Amino acid sequence: MVAPYQVRIQAESPKPLRPDEVALSARYSAISHGTEMLVYRGQVSDGMNLDLPTFEGSFAFPIKYGYAVVGTVTAVGSAVSGMTVGDSVFALHPHQTRCHVQQSLVHKIPATVPLKAAVLAANMETAINIVHDTRPALGDVVVVIGLGVVGLLVAWLLSRQSVQVIAVDPATHRRACARQLGVQTVVHPDEAPQCVRTQSLQRGADCVIEVSGNPQALPMALDVVGQEGLIVVASWYGNKPVTLDLGSRFHRGRVRMRSSQVGQLAPDLAPRWDYQRRMSVVWEILAQFPFQTVITHEYRFLDAAIAYQDIDQQLVPMIQTVLAYEHTQGDEHV
Image (tube, rainbow, N blue to C red; front, side, top):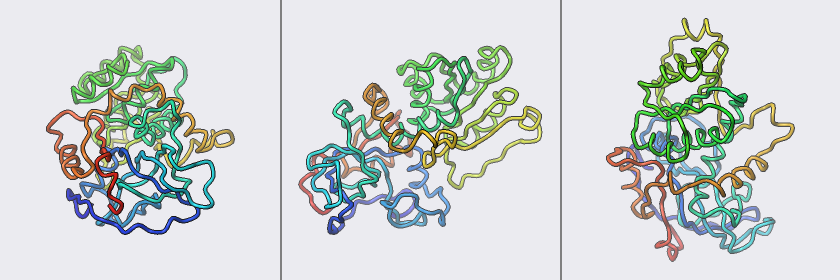
């Protein structure tokens, strides 16, 4: 990304493979419609630190960004263990045909998980972390605001538990996708307050998960949450301003509000959970997840600029967009 709304593909000279690195040839990569599009639009503070060593540049542009690549191992460094040439892997790396990645950022994909489904690994890890941070009790009414990919995954995960899920989104195609995934109660934002009152028997929601990426959704979260309820803000707003009325419903309702960010485990789980355990759950779940429902669009890697533009303009209904690299496998230097 060379400037807001400007993407180009450029050549890189391959660097020597370090002992702790894995070389891979990409098959698919997923464009994040949330976090990544904030970067694409220039809606991130220029001075913010990059949180993955695979990113290059800065949020002031240019920047090489992206964090969901699926590919095949073509070489392994001398210090790498547990991976061999030919393995299918998921890597936290920007969109690139061939790359060298630290082994700590590479995960072997089990044979039970289709390669295209594996591009959802980072989003599924985020969704699991959100559920861990929310931890609803049996029978709770949980509202999920925003049905992008992460919101859909959260709603799907919660709908498999004994909680009442109310999924909220203004877009018809995203609401339809939630219903396809088996979420029972899916409503437009205008219908949400009355729906919550009815399903909660006037108590309000026990938990609200805000994952729309839109700061304007937070007032709704405050409106529908119950006394002593929990709001989990899973959205990253970048530099978009947030204005909230904290002098009425929030204060008198003793509402709790916290963020959820995938880079940290829920602190009370730390004695028993680590990132490896969380990732093993990602693969178990992705082996069962109907990924074809959410992966709605596929573009050639060389058409990445068109893909970003289409996601931004939303002229057609889109959920998850994937770049395919099959036709570029012979190019050693891009």
